[in-house]
Amino acid sequence: MVKGLERYGKILAGHEKARYLIAKESGLLEKKIGEAKRILESCELCERKCRVNRLKGELGFCKADSKARVFGAHSHYGEEPELVPSATLFFAGCTMRCVYCQNAPESIQPEMGTEWGEERIAEWIEEKYREGCKNVNFVGGDPTPYIYNILRALQLCDANIPVVWNSNAYYSEKTAELLQGIVDVYLLDLRYFNEECAVKLSSAPNYPAVAQRNFLAAARDAELLIRLLVMPSHIECDAKPIIKWIFEELGNDARLNILGQYRPMHLAHKFPGISRGLTIQEYQTAVQYAKSIGLKNLV
Image: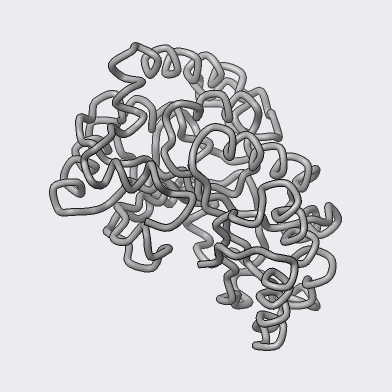
């Protein structure tokens, strides 16, 4: 197993338990479910803190109510090598509005997803575990609006399968606390270093500070995989400063996947600078910069 994911490897080998099972046995998971439900009464799961009562059907920015809605569920072979095959559950709804989202519109419109009860989610996880998937991977959209449903589903599971939290990292401190002791691997996107870019392209005010806070908390809590989507025209304002921040704050062994698969999807054609594909030179500039400053655990 690669450096930084040693405990994950021990779970796969059967030498350790997934953290949600330990939390379930101690009663911690049940307490977190209760806290998550209380938060839904005045929702502060993401950094927007809309404070709507989702238990009564009130809708905030993400437009999710109290029911989980899914637009995709399958064994995924396109993730990082150590995660494949990954039992990936795609939730419909997101806390951000990336104009280049490759999964839109399903990813940002909960009504386009199919309602899944917690029992169905739990049964699906158990089935994928029996099929040989190495982890359960909660993604979207973004899984943050559905953490209550996810925790309830895990309470119904017994499979010794690692939990991967695959998120844009734009979640609140309350959500970070709910995740502690449950997640085995945080698979987080670090998308912007420049707030103007975050607001313009993803409607995400204060994103850099929020994401950095959550990355540091994730690194303290469990094992961490970092994704950086390199975007055209955003090498100097975002990619390079992000890489430097990772090196300075998370160390040269931080596991980083520099993604070169950007395509101008969804509404990207309306935004000069990102209305084209990423060039090989732009991608190589980011990778070479990472290597030049000393990062050595690249995917």
